[in-house]
Image (cartoon, rainbow, N blue to C red; front, side, top):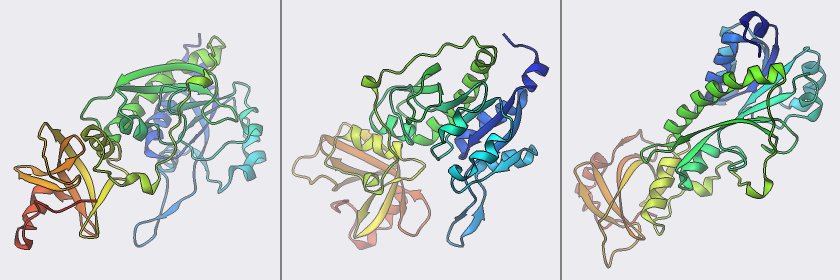
Length: 320
């Protein structure tokens, strides 16, 4: 095994990643290894004023004076990247398919930090899907990169429980740190050649495609567990929503009760509670506690309900 920090520093790494999830992974790498360059997505215009904003990974790399490459299409940068004389590529939520000409060039290959227990939840939204689908555990996989999406050999894995109060946001943060820790535990064996590579069982594969806008709408005809999972699985991005009086109402937080209402429509507001308002679903009730009316900031669901008092009250209104 390679234990000497100075020897580790001699391994030249190219890091490829973009969002906040990849930040702890890159920061961990730079503590022990030489990250020669970072490839990330281009700056994008954000907000109503279209302010040009750098990806979180670019900010980290710039602070550490690491070369940053931001191709619109990585296919056009194959020669430039391969000229960097890299020993190993580490990717984490980069956001583009990486050509084989790049993946096959480094002497130690290319590995990926993926936020699921592969072969479960291959794809771009494994954190959201794990919660929405009601999984009770997930984790991080370090895998060999191949042309096929998240289908490479597994090098190491570590799992954690998904708590009932977890949201996509809290699980994101837990898995991000777990990814950093697992990568640093795994790299020495990759470098000294003792790592074991296990093929994935494709018959066990499931997929976690990016969330579509149509999937963000809450279907109150579903069970209370399904509705609750969707709300927390889309918190804090992109957010689950419904409509009230033809206006979008984002729902950020909720909980379930054992209450059941007969002769009440699914989606109908059932009662006002001290911390929000209840909504009838297929097999009971979900109490919404934090919402965001269209064009307004987040607010407590109770304050929102009080605002309806001079309009005849919220109870009996239908959310769709």
